[in-house]
Length: 368
Image 1 (cartoon, rainbow, N blue to C red):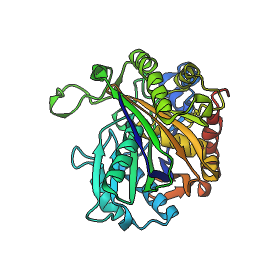
Image 2 (cartoon, rainbow, N blue to C red):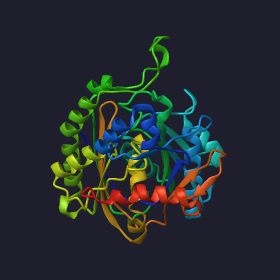
Image 3 (cartoon, one colour):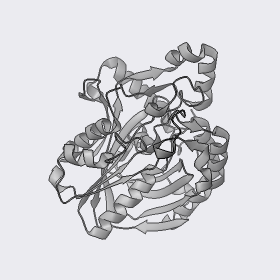
Image 4 (cartoon, helix red, strand yellow):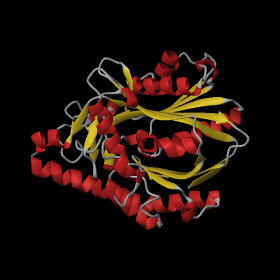
C-alpha cells in the first residue's frame, strides 16, 4: 500500500456537469419489465441516470464543468499551470482528453497535462497526483477533471449493468496554500482483478467481440469488502483521525447497498455516510466529487469539513483520502443540453431542477 501525506495544497472549488437527458426506472421497465426494473432500483438505490446523447463526449461535459468553475472562482485560465484528467472513456484513442480540454479552455502553452486511465478509484488517485505535482513543481493552480460517459460502452439490453451506470463530469480546483490542512492518502492495486470488470478493446480485441462493459458483480463486491476497509483505516491513521471525527464518509457511489454495508463495517453512522446516487447511478471516476456537490454544497460552502473519501474498482484499484475541505468558493452542479448549452441547475426547468434536487436529497444519510 502506498501511504502519502501532502501538505500545503487546498481545494478551492468544485463543479459538476450532467447531460440533460435522464433515463428513469419507468423507461427501463419498457426494456426489462416493470417487476425487474423495480427490483433493480430497490437493490441498488438507483432511480434514474443522466445519459449523453450520441453527439456528446466526456470532454463536452468536462469543459462545461471546468468553465463554470473557473468563472465562479474568478480564475484566469492563463493562471492554471497543471491539468490532470481522469477518464476511462476518452473521446479518442489518442490524443487523451486532457489535450482537447487544454485547447478548449485556452490554458497556457507551458501548462502540464496528464491523462490518467482510471475508473472508480480515479478521483482519489487524481487528487493525489494533482496535489503532489502541484506541490513538487511549486506551481500555483491546478485543475483536476474526472469525466466518464460509461453509457457509451454499455449494452442497453444487459440488465446487469445498463440500469447502474450514468454519465457525468466534475472539475476540482486546487491551489498552493501553506495554511491548507494536510491531505492523507492510502492507495493500492491488484491486477488479479482485471478480468472481472472490463471493456474489451484495442488491438487485442477480436473483430467479433463486442466492446461492451463486462462486470462480475460478485467478484466486485468481494473485492470491495476485502480491500477498502483497510485502505480507509490507513488514511485515517495517517491523518490522526478516528471515524468519530469524520464529518462525512464519501465512498465511490456504486450502489446504496454496498455503501451502507461498508459504512457499517467501518463504524460510521448513517448520518456520516453519503449516499448520493439515486438520480445519477454509478458515474465511475466522477462519482465522489459529484456526491459532494449534490449532497453537501451548503455544508462545504459554509465552512471546513473533515471528509473521508474512498474509491475502488477496475483493476483492482483502490484509494482513500482524509482531507479537510471548505469553505469552498464554488460548489455546484449544472446540466448540459443536447444543443451544447450549459444550464445552471437553479436556472433549469422546474421539472429538471426538481428531479435533480430530489436525487441529491435522500443521499446525505444512509439511514433514509
